[in-house]
Amino acid sequence: MVSIESGDRQGPTTARRTEGDLARRRALADAASGVLPGEAEVAAGAARIQRFRCVIYLCGAPNADIGAPRKECTEYAEAFGWEITSVIEDRVGLLPPDGREGLVRAIDSVKGGEAGAVLTAWRSMISPVPQEYDQIAGEIEKAGGFLHVKDSERAMPPGLGRTASPEPKAADNCAGGAR
View 1: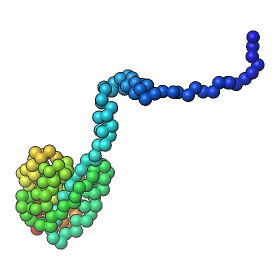
View 2 (view 1 turned 90 degrees about the vertical axis):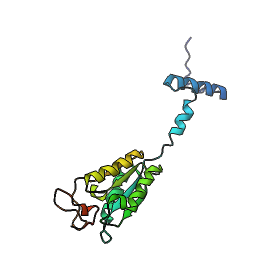
View 3 (view 1 turned 120 degrees about the vertical axis):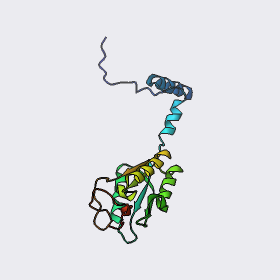
View 4 (view 1 turned 180 degrees about the horizontal axis):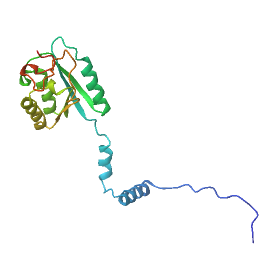
C-alpha cells in the first residue's frame, strides 16, 4: 500500500548521552586519532606556549641619536612575534665589550632565562673586532641563547662612528666611537 502523506511525522531524534557515554566517546575519538590516554590534558597545557623573548641591546656615544636603530630593532622583533623584555642602551662609546654595564645586563637576562636572545642593530654595537664579537656571541650561546644582529652588512649612518675602512679600528668599539 502506498501512502500519500508527505513529510516526516517523527522529528529528529535527540541524543540522550550520559557523562559516561561522552567520556567513552571522547576516549574512542582520541584513540582513533592517536592521542594516548592522559595526553589530551598535556596538549591543553601546551596550548599556552609563551612567545619567544628577547632583549634589545644598543650602544652609542653619549651624544649619538640611536632612536632609529631602536625603532628598527623593535619593528624587527615584532615582525617575528618576539616579546621584548627590555631595551638596554649603553652610552659609553669607546669601551670594550667587557667594560659595558648594559651589555653585561643583556647577557645576564639570557643567563637568568628572562630572554632567549640579544638583538642588536649592527655587529659593531657588540664589537667591530671579530675576536671580541665571537667571545660575546659564545658567552650568550653558553647561557642558552643567541646573539642576533639585525643588519650585519649595512654601514652605519654617518656620525655613529663606523669607519669606511675594511679593517675596524679598536677605537670604533661601539657606535659613536672616534674616527
